[in-house]
Length: 155
Image 1: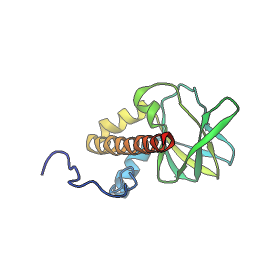
Image 2: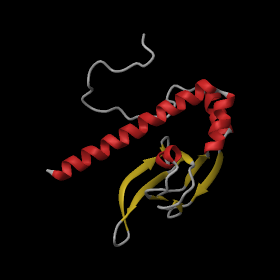
Image 3: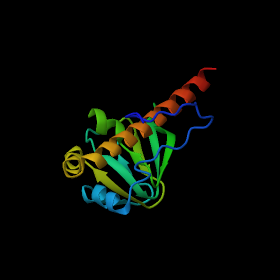
Image 4: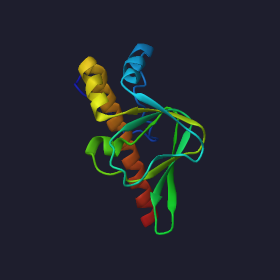
């Protein structure tokens, strides 16, 4: 068995990348111990495009919409459901937020700052490593989907 387990065949449909899909209740409790919670009502803005904070958000309940700025307002490019994450770009690169995110339904999010992630990594390095690999897989999937959409629009 290698350090990395790569699929030997290209799947026909991409499975949905998930954060810590095999984590135990105790491991999730360890992750969530290093976060703080926010509740949002429908229409509330979770993050604003151009904001400079670097937090990652775990969507525990509800559904969010991702809106990118346009000349006149914003355009929805995605929705994010419970069980997923948002804010991964700024979490990794520290750059300003590239989109606005707004609650579509009542939502509960767990916010993880870089300092809180460092505390998680100090407490449980193995769990933090898996967290980062899974977060990278989610990011890769989203980039591939954006690439596919751009390629389809170019035809």
